[in-house]
Image (cartoon, rainbow, N blue to C red; front, side, top):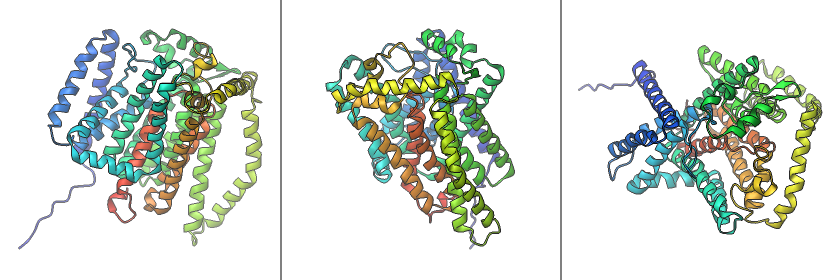
Length: 502
């Protein structure tokens, strides 16, 4: 008696074309929905109706939503998050702004909420993922818990309450959804590859802006509604010390620089872990473009953080090589490189201090001084409300910056004003837990995943440093989705399981 086993091939052109067609179709649908709604807002409801019908059709009562459908939407949203210009949006009253990536994540959140109500199986998966992700999810939920608890004591609750629920909708719900549906290391890798590809495209736009000395926002200005003040500030700040400052799809060069800084370690990790020449060429081009895009922002902090992230990756990979390749003829050369890096570190530290202190130009020095002034102005107000703060979204108003500048130039300072001292402490705890867990996994994972987990260590470290100079919240949606995909991979993390080997 003979048995026949059908093995599915590793790569299928038909499946790849189908997935690409689905992603393209959903992306075009979201773009058409956004464009139509900008022209005539009531049309937005017509585009949302099929999504609601789709939820009912694919997720009948009592059954879980198809994971493949939700993961497909997550990947589309992950690609659109960095690529779509955030200044092209529509807004209805106090509701959060609407953009194609947000519409996609609203659909993902709808699937998640449906499953939490009707599927006992998905609820168990969510709770298990929360438990397995440990401190990462604990700090995320604690972050939103202190925000919720601050609402009754907020100064200006009419602003704080809508702002808190806006953050819960665009950050917390996607985190919970991605945590639930991204359950394997290969899901985390796929999400980060899409993020890195999106950063590659954004970096190319930034390079194009620098080459042409024209902002993308200026070109798209006829389509920007109800944001004339922001556009005026963006146009006035595009030149600093005679150097053009690119911002691509972001609202500020610093925001773009931070985005490229925390994605660059992943582009580097995919480059060193690639097994085919075509993949190596693509990721080499992506990494070079991302670094060049960070330079194009003319943001001192972004360039410094990007350099630190790359140096961290090189140091970690060099340490792993020296530890494991004891018989390799390249071991002395790797040791020499590490020694030279150690000897060069004092010079790098002096140069970094000069960059941070504003020695590179008059406006750079003024920028540094303005950050010091903000801390001095905020400190007495923080001491007045050390716990609970003034409420979500209140920091710029409390300091008198509302309408005069884009934001306060320090996210930890903003959090301390919004929530008191627990705010920045918990956010730093979240990034620390993320980085520490990644380093722990790098020691225990399959060798093919080591570089990627090193990148997962370097990324939150880069975010922690970058948040010292920026308070824009545009990147936080990407940060929470990235953290959720990383935390969700805890569910099946094991060195012995072949499905973790990518």
